[in-house]
Length: 302
Image (cartoon, rainbow, N blue to C red; front, side, top):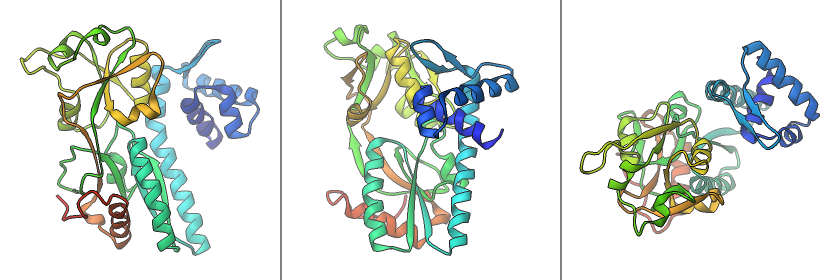
């Protein structure tokens, strides 16, 4: 694939709207459509379903996005790092985040960090739930703020920065909306949307159990990305979990966020490779700790 084809496909896969895609890329809308059609002919299958009301990825399109996005991001980072090296400028610290709340912490810490370390630059990127530990292991990021549990021998884990109550997201006409309270046992009567990809089994079981406490199976349906899970809930295909504050970012008229205290809270922590405990990483972790004064000071990694 040529670079302009990758950019057109990945931007449309994110926006799911041809006009917004053309505006972001600075191209005519017809040029974007032509590029996508040419790519579909080469692959031999539609990448997007198009109607007068919406644009959606097909299964082939979802697979291509999942395979292509990490490689494209790595190429972009490599080009940017090479350009910085050619200019003889800044040290670059790449920081990942897996939720809007974590992004807020990272952005605030990045501003303070670059003020104190003017020769350094912080670049941030979103970590997909389908591959929560892949970017940090491949070196795409030096550290990330992500959900517990993380129990990996090669990764160090810092203190909890965010703790959020859990919510169960259901379609606004789902029977659960008429219940006084929804329990773990009730999940056997619905479908729980979970995530495909390189998700550790212990993480999956922690957030999306396969059985109720009495042993009843909980049906599962797999989504590739968080936005896909939201759309599936909105279409009445199943239910899923999120933190309470995420409703500020992802509220939809077709979805209700129900309290669900029967599973642990969502807790977000800094994670970094044990072999990557550099002065730059330590300085950034210290900055994050200062922005969370109510939490314990940064401690020895687990």
